[in-house]
Image (cartoon, rainbow, N blue to C red; front, side):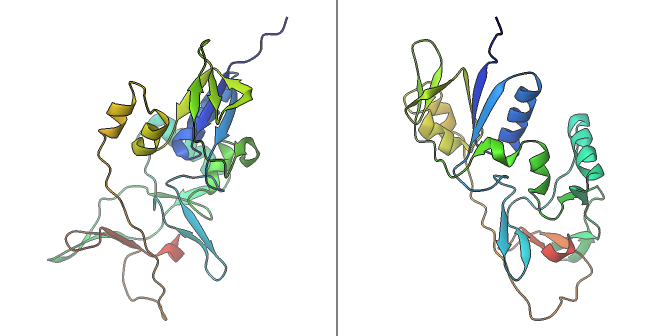
Length: 219
């Protein structure tokens, strides 16, 4: 008899969740990914505007410091999905401008989340489906949103701790998840009537109300 593959439910279609889904599928698991939004990426958030195209409002770039991630980005670069961000990145301080540390900063082409489809197909994600309950049965399997037509052997919560804590309510995981401090990061988009006269594509701000500024059209 053919043995059925084990089933996993991954909640969250960001980089972490899609990597989990991809790696499990590579070794024969049957994986279903859920996400409450309508696109891939999570914190690689992208806003699509009719007059401007794609605007990255989440992570602005990626650096690769492990062999596995270097290999992953190299494969994406070979397909034209990512590319090094060309141009100078600076530190802006009270004393003036300094060049930021030299390193390869990767950006998605044409947007930060473009390359994620190579990790996991959009057709294999249940978008706009908010997971409100995860119930474990007596046999150890999981039910998502009280739908007993499909059971999962493993549940992976690939989401911020506060959201994961809501789904882990009443379990031993709830308290540790709620103890993780989270600080919000606000992102904004500014439009200018004419090109700015600066000699950098992005800058880390040292002091003041902002932490980071970037020219999205240089990506």
